[in-house]
Length: 313
Image (tube, rainbow, N blue to C red; front, top):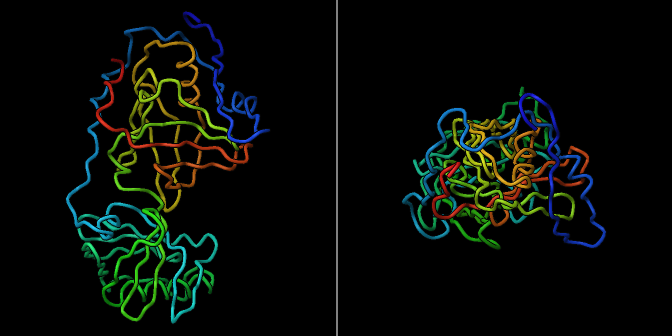
């Protein structure tokens, strides 16, 4: 394509099939095919390429299991009160995030909260000033009941912190023997760290990114997203809310040429409509969208070690 003529880049992908019969190539092509105008030209660009992202390092904090709590966001799966397990209601959206600044923010499922929180290697103490839902709130009775139990366990004295299964699952136990079971929603360092888009997921298949570590995202707490899509740097927006994130279309900040395959994959990443994903921690993070024709579509990110090449280098 040259000048102002229009043409179509089609994504050329190599699929690695996890289970026999998961032949989703045609769906992926339809999903990731975009129309591009103009020809990327080496050396041309709009604006200055961003500086290299700084590799994320864990802020100073306590060791032990308590240290694993900090900086991550956790979903509340169930509580145990007087020896009785009570699962969180479906779609309750109860979660908590412990900050390195001795604060905790979260949502009981009916009402958000913010309070003080002191974390040591083995204990957690949450401040008592954590207002919950009122009877007038538009919240189902069973959700309010679960909220009351969760709030009481969290705020009634110090809790012991213990690993339950692995680094993604933790339990908190008060002095009466009541428990809160936590499942990681997103890991430490989600914000301000470079995350490599390792592969796309669709149903039972994955698609490795041809450009490898040249494809990475940096999510910022102010809602901006920067990174590189394989050949060109980009910018955009991402809105995080509870267990979900909405990604908005990404815009190139330069127009440089790479191989046709990389440019096709790049066009597919940048040409997406706004999508809302659920967030899953799984040896990295996954953004999962189940609403656009595939039974399972998403992105799998791993934290990028070292400093990525400067975009366009």
